[in-house]
Length: 356
Image (cartoon, rainbow, N blue to C red; front, side):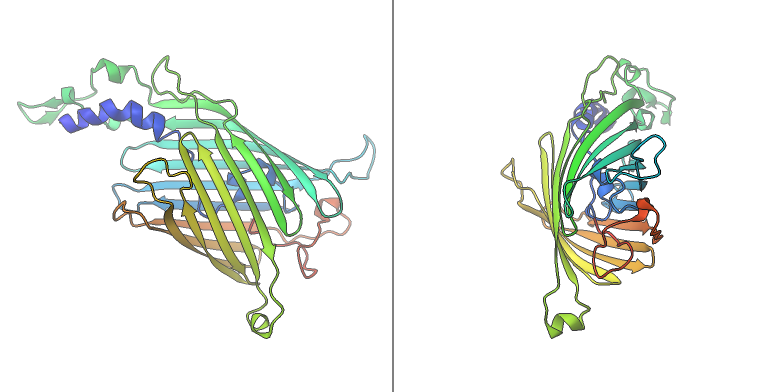
């Protein structure tokens, strides 16, 4: 009984600190739309994807996160009555996010509309700008709390709602408008990007007349493709490419740096990512927090991905983190449609399957 009451008293601290952190994904390179709105329309064809993340799979502690996106590039006409299309084009898309905690009943969902704009710097390089805005909702399910005044000691029954004034002053749901922006510098083998989320600092306080601005989320990311070495051994493996990618994230006092190396073959890829805590703000912090094997498999226009986060800290038996992803990229090719004229990534193949 006292434990439940103590938990309730600690909730303002817990929710203002922990719930302010954005959900993140180990397979960020498979669904970069979750990081940067400037990625929208990058592959210049219809593209969609979903990813599911389960953290701490124990039934009582599990945290589930899902993210999905859908986008395409749209060519802009050069004039009001012109049939010619400019090289500078826009990407349009939408994203949806859901995060649920089993133990607390907390749920966070968000739906966003996304637009990006591409500027060709020269034949090889382009600069992209992205803007994302949408509606978010946080549900804390305070009705699931069991407080002292709900327990009848005489007949060992549980009454209805609490009459505790603190409970009455808290709202179960929070609705807010959210705005994010990003940019991306890209060519066929290299990309560098950065994005800020929650630029408008929406109020996520669950207390009436409270004020808890959502912390800014910064991400800086990049990647580089290394071509296969010219050797009989590498030829026998199918001449894979090596993708080196990294993603630095910071929100309030939280920081994380992911570094990954992925070997990409024609039909599958595999690699490993290291998750680090570079700033180590306490004496108990670990520089390396997990080592995460990753594998993907291509089936025509679809790519399936799986990763497992193996904890390297003294946190205990967390049972790791599992992620499943599925992305789709249309293979449609129209030589007369500017919307589908793209620079081929490699080997003259129409379009390309992105891992970023």
